[in-house]
Image (cartoon, rainbow, N blue to C red):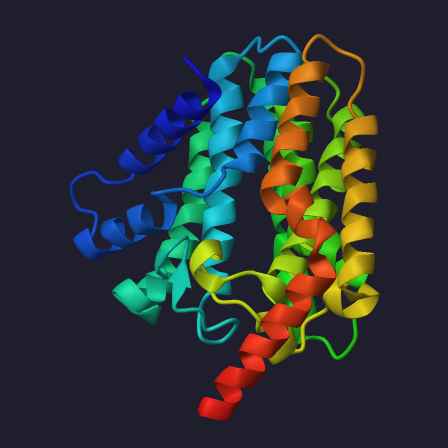
Length: 306
């Protein structure tokens, strides 16, 4: 079974387990809408890949950890899209959950996904309960306060925030949880693997900042220009587009260098390189200034004809 199939089957099982008799049908549909079809699934990929690099000695727990992290990520997207935050009408090329099912069900679906994540973890700890306890703590650390993704979202409500603190919490925390939990699920040392997630998580956020400034919304599957519109911290704003791309490339190299020597090191380096090319293609980055000028001209023309 390839990794992508393994991840999708684990997510399907986790979601289906919550769709039993008595579940409100619209809530069940909203939850499924939030999870499927998925995006790149990079966080669960990292989790499974690190578990494999550590021997994959408890596949059930590794799958549960990967599923939990992706379910929490999906919950964060549902909440991030709400009118009180981004007010985004689309996500992954389809209507966002609050557009498809209304705000009340979107809030509840996001909450339910977080609970489902921890239920999924709890159900997978029979073989190695001591490992499950460590994984549970790692995942919770990546979600809550003071340094998890909830804290990252909350920084948007503060008058000032350091860009690195914002990015480390909002995006990096769940990447770090993915790599650490993957190791712990297989009996490895989570802290040895946390740096890989830290580096790649920050790189992911920098790339997202650049794409928010330049990408086509249809290609991206969600609205663009939100950082400027909402006054959010952004690498593209702070460092400029060229500087942000250079920073992204340094972060990707840092992620590659952080991979410990192990049997699966080559596979992990390939995942990082493939993901970096997907996020910020080299040909795209090489023409970043010309692309920025083109996008600015299109926006100016749109404003003039409006």
